[in-house]
Length: 172
Image (tube, rainbow, N blue to C red):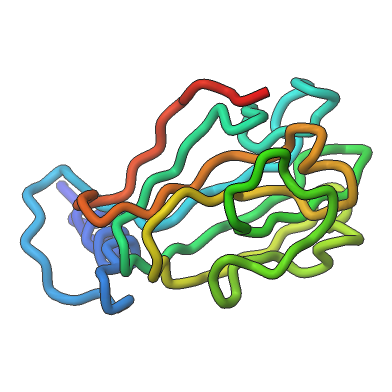
């Protein structure tokens, strides 16, 4: 007997992840199996790269998360590093990256305990509206971590139609 559970799950995922410019799950016509996602699983210390000072295995901007302007972005943060505390914050694109927490580029675009960091396997979610175009850093606010390369890039684009995630050239 065939079950409808996979179709139900796909519909629920679409409703939860298709957050548009107004930040609500507005009715959208999306041909299956395309699912627009406005969320990011951000994993600190995912690999041993750079002494585990990385997000999702990338350092120094080697990963770029692009979202349309006006998009509601949801970040699911997890500290996978078994030794060090980590945090995450969206800040302006500066070179060199900051050495400590800064004023966030968007309201509520940060985890708890920015300077102290969340302990190993600690988690936090944050949500913000990407209401300004430009290039930003998603960086670890624990003093020295961001400056040591623990950051990826966030691009808010007026021409993007849906979020994307891509490996990019790392900046040293």
